[in-house]
Structures are given as C-alpha cells and as structure tokens.
Image (cartoon, rainbow over the protein chains, first blue to last red):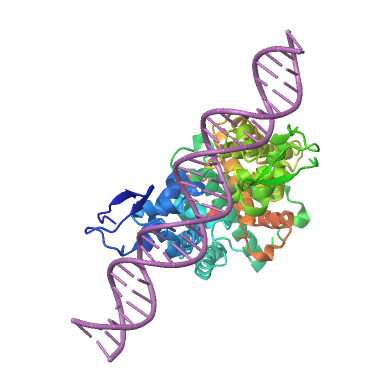
Length: 224
Length: 224
DNA sequence: GACAGAAACTTTCCAGTGTCAAGATGCAGA
DNA sequence: TCTGCATCTTGACACTGGAAAGTTTCTGTC
C-alpha cells in the first residue's frame, strides 16, 4: 500500500509512470483499486466515483481499472460482492446465541454504518451487475444467514410466517441504516448508531402491538 | 407538453432549434424538464441521468436545464422537494382514520413503489442539496405528518417512546420500499407491493414480540 | 539460459458529459 | 416605441468511460 509512487504530468493528462522505485507491475492492484473506490464512495458518494480518480489514487494509468474490472460496472460489482461477504461474515457470528435476532440486527446496522462505502453499492442494481455469479452467490449466502437467524428468533410456525417475519425484520434494519446514512433520522437519537438502534428496537415493540390492533381479524396471522 | 418540436443536427451536435411551430420560449420548461428527468430516472436509474438527455427530451438546447436549475444538483434538488411534497400530500390524507398508522404505512410504500423516480432521489444527499430551504421545508413537513400519525397509532406515553416508535415504523416501511425497488425481496412475495406489504405487516407482529423477549429487562420500555 | 505465451499495464483516441461565459430572442411594463 | 430582464442558444473547456493497440513484465517449458 505504501509503495513509492510518482505522478507525472505529460501531454496534458496526469498519469502514473513506472519508475525505478515503482515497478511496472503493481502487485495487488485489484484490491488497491477496490480500497480506493470504497474510500472515494465514503467521502464523496457513489455518484461521484470516477475510474480515473481511483487510478490516480493507486498510482496507475487511467485505463488500468477498466482492464481489471471490465469497466465501471465491474468495479461496483466487485465492491458489492466483497460487501456481501463481509456482511455474511459479520452477521453469521451471532447465529447460535439465544438473542440471535437482536444481535444480528445490530450487527447488520453496525456493518452498514461503518462500511457505507460497501453498503451503498450493495443495494444499487443500477450500479452493479446483479447477475454476476460471484455477487449472486455472496448475496444469497448473506440472505440465508439472515433468514435462518430470524427463523430461530421468532418462533414462527409455518414457512409463510417465517418469511413474513424475515422480510419485516430485514426491512426494519435496512431502513434504519439507509435513513441513518442519509441523515434523515431525528437528531435527538444521538451520534451512536448502536444506542439509536436499541431505541428503535424498543419502538418496534410498540409498532408490533399497534399493527396487531389495526390489522382486521381476517388479516391477522392465523396461528394464534 | 405536446408542442411540436424539431430536432436538428448541426455542427456535430444534436440541438433543438426554434421553428415556426415551436416558439423560442418553451412556456413551462421547468416542469417539462423535471418530468423528463423523473422518467429518465425510472427507466435508467439516477446514475445515468444526463442533463443533455433531458434537454433533448424536452426539445431545448443542452444548456437550458443548467440555466433553470443552476446545475445537475439543482435538478435533483427540485425533484426531491417535489417528491416530499407528493409524499406529504399522500400520507396526510389518512391522518384522522382509526387505522391511520397502517394506512399511512401502506401509503408510504405505495408512493415509493409508484414514484421511484422521485423516491430514489429524495434519500440521496450526495445527489441533491439537502440544505436547500425549499427542500428542507418539504422534507420537514412530510416527516411531521408521519410523526404525528405514529403518535396516534401507537399509544405511546412519553415523547421518547413516541419518537422511538416513529423511527421504528419509518425504518420498516422505508426499508421495505428500498428492498422492493432494488429487487432484493424474495420472489414468493409476489408482484403486488400492497399485498406484500400486508404480509410484512403480519411479520412485524412476530418481530415485535421477539424483540420484547430478547431485550434485557432494563432495556425494555419502562411504561409497562 | 533462451524462448514463447500470457498477463499486467500504458498510450492514444473517441464520443459523451457538466459547467461556464457570451450572445440571441422575446416578453412585460413604462 | 423603448428598455430591462428572463428565457433560451451557442460555443468552448476540462473531464469522463470505453475501446483498440501497443509495451512491459512474469511464468512456465525446453
């Protein structure tokens, strides 16, 4: 990461040129480019990411990123796949615990807030290629983990109820992260996302009860 | 909207040129440009929106949008402000009803799904200018309406509990819309967002109960 | 060590983009 | 009719993503 790089101005464009201190082959350019892209997204937003800028940061020519990832979409796809891997690893840790549902929900929120550079890209199919096999595999794995955790957390009888609970829980944590990242949650919640999420969890109890009251009898879950 | 327009190829760029059938002054170019931009976002995503393209759609020169909105950010800001106005109007209708919480939640989801061109921009402060007074006013008004509805729906005792419930409910509906729009919800939920949202509402009851079980006693809401 | 092929990276070019400054046009009020 | 001003166009600039073709280095095989 700290190889000496030299940026040289030539022919009106800034480009990186191999020098005695910096070899022609970067070594691990792929991961360096991803790291640069994630950092760029975190500081300036996904909309302002530029292949040429991350190439500059990595000290290579402007066409190097395209060569490694096939294009801008490829960069986003790689970021999304890596992000789902990180998310799965992080949420999977809490699988066995008795309070697995809550712990997983908090892990999801912490991941989204701490790694917004990944998180923002993961849910934007207009940026990445959702049909990419590697990405699809990582995404499915992350979802399976979440799904299973909700299954043990809510004692849902039939598969439909389990699915509904999973969608509800997922929507709640996902929405919290998106609103938090976009700065739309009330300021009184404070700066600590974990504490704020705990408050929201308390609120979720009231919301569940209100939902139960407002759903008409035939719309209520049949099991009870 | 249906004024005759003529696109002419000149000097290598396509531009619109006033003709006998199309006056120099468009009339309501501002709203025509917003409409074109929203349509473009819905079909190609916010990332691919181009000022020159919406100018082409509206039949004006490529610099006309920048003149009206100050720049690309200005277009997004205008869309976001209009979007919050539409959302407030739509959720505000259900204010008095006994099942206001559920009705408002469904209205929120329907708005997001039907008007994704607005919705996607509203929560992306990297695209628009969040400090714009008009946008801030529209956003605050929409949030107030939602906040008040949750207050009557959940019989929350103290202001903190009300705020927590509001954040929880908002997170849930918002997350549902985002996941729905990004195509990440399980296919078994079907095509109809309203029906799927009702399923998720059923799931929310189970999630509320599970949260109540998993929160430690001192973390539980004190009121009961 | 010499060679060949593949992989990594650069160079050069192109069409397209957002933004800016300057100009042209038409409207609204005096 | 004249004047000021908002509306819109023209032309230029620096920047972008992508494609094609070239150069450099690595890796394996003899």
